[in-house]
Amino acid sequence: MAEADITRLLALARDGEPAQMGAVFEALYPELRRLANSRMYGRESTFTPTVLVHELFLRISQGSPLSLADRNHFFAASAKAMRWILVEHARQRAAGKRGGDQVMVSLDDQIPDAASALTSVLMLDQGLEALEAISPQRRQIVELRYFAGMEFAEIAALLEISERTVYREWERARAFLQAMLDDGGDGR
Image 1 (spheres, rainbow, N blue to C red):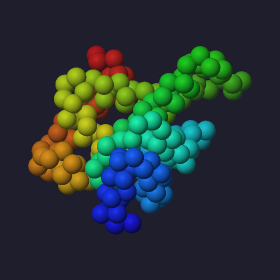
Image 2: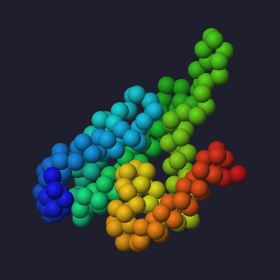
Image 3: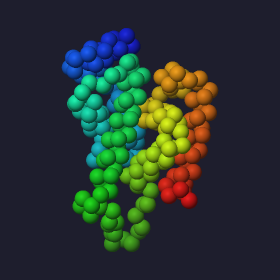
Image 4: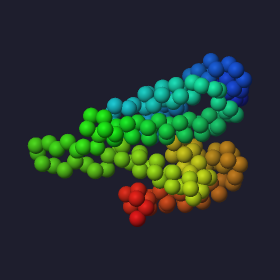
């Protein structure tokens, strides 16, 4: 579906025709599925890319209509929602449900892998929250690049800044997050 058609459907959804959001999801489903798959690579199998996209649809289509201008704006909102969904899921899995953070010890005496996907998602979320306090723009660039899979030129157009600025802020944000993840997320 053409960019103009997506923009038209988003305008209709915003103006009181919520069923049009379903048409947007239908048109962009393959891209959303690829995006979700790339964000979930190597993660646990109980939460699949299909489940993530369907949860995204439920969250975006419920409640008051979102004011989404175009395809890029749709993917920016989707990236933020995917981040929230993944973090919420990781928190639920790490909570007290069925033993929470207890480690299962098997009889073969091998130490369980400490770098779980759940821990990574939660640490990345902590890093993004810390980054928000330093630079909301850098946090937004990370969300758009990492969670929405947008290219630097697309991010620059969406944020109305130069592509060079996006790249420079991406590099700074990446260095900050890497340092934070290397420290275990505790800011040491």
